[in-house]
Amino acid sequence: MRIGIDSSVLVAAMHGEHPMHAVAARWLDDRLSSDELCVTHHSVLECYAVLTRLPGQLRITGDEAHRLIGGTVRRNMELAGFESEWTWSIIDLLAERHVMGGRSYDVFAVEVLRRCGIEAIATFNRQHFVDIAPDLLIIDPAVPTARSDR
Image 1 (cartoon, rainbow, N blue to C red):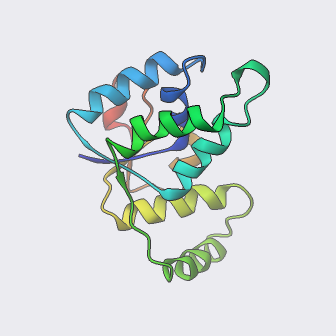
Image 2 (cartoon, rainbow, N blue to C red):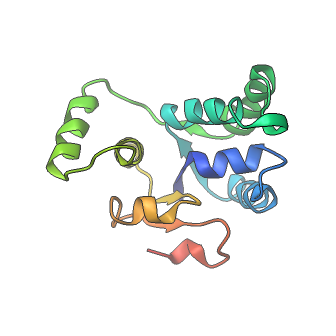
């Protein structure tokens, strides 16, 4: 199965102190051997930003973030292709669906991943994706039977 991976899963899998680290890391490790995983360029950048801006002792350096992202994403996942003209069709879609604010990023990610042939999206933020991706499987790695959840 081709699965798009949301940054919520990536950050949890990469950061050893994240409350969902064990769940995310185990789920991701299992999927790497059985599924094709795909991420958007935006999700990769978001991971770097989140990892390097966490509060206090949770924050990691740019070098550490680079190493974690390289070892987790670069070596194991497809980076979704992106055509610059998609921007305008996705902006049109946002306006048509009356999507505003931060949800715009989720819709953008889903549309790019959809155009790259994903069948599902893995996220810890299920509610962010239910309305914008009703045709895709929404997988919550914390729910053991989530693979069939729509």
